[in-house]
Image 1 (tube, one colour):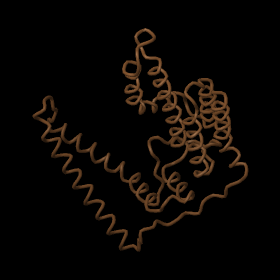
Image 2: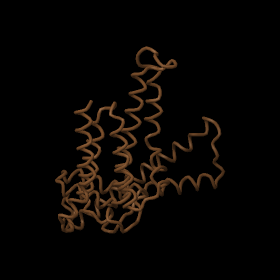
Image 3: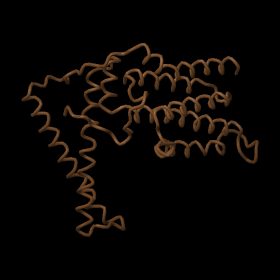
Image 4: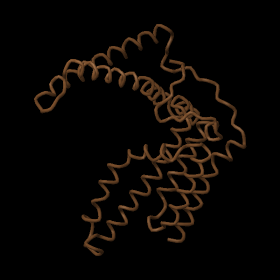
Length: 250
């Protein structure tokens, strides 16, 4: 349980961004997202500055554009849902589309993309256990960080068991092509749930026998320097300044 656990979103590297303290990166990402959210949708120029900040951090972290774009697909359902707004909001005014709906589509797409990129940059440069420790440094309740830590560590285990069960089913000729064949798949998910529950119970009993009292051991955090603080807050502070200017102008 104490070993390193690298999530699929993490990109191994030794850049300045990778070496920043996790809690500073969490604060920076949160501040950047707040700046993006409070920016009026009409201030389109501000979103260009936000995108420039994302690009600068990605370049410093040595992340490939394809790496970032591939993970942006997570917001596709939200953008597709927002794409219906020009047809549903207000009276058609431009080629059969609502101007208000077009503004809302732009607002959702721009802010969702920038917020997702900020989260992707955080996950790509910070290992999952470090994010949990960063949240603990920010005094997030230990109950929540403990649940997050266990979830991160055992999610891949459950996913691996699911993949093994899928291979076993296919090797036995299970290739569902109609609705009546999903019974075996449902029974497989039931077995996976039972096995996961039993595994969790065994792990918990093992931890209790080793002196677990509801709190994980706290590792000594690395010293935070003034340079780290300045480097991590440069982009979010600049973004907040842009947001305030945009609010004032609009």
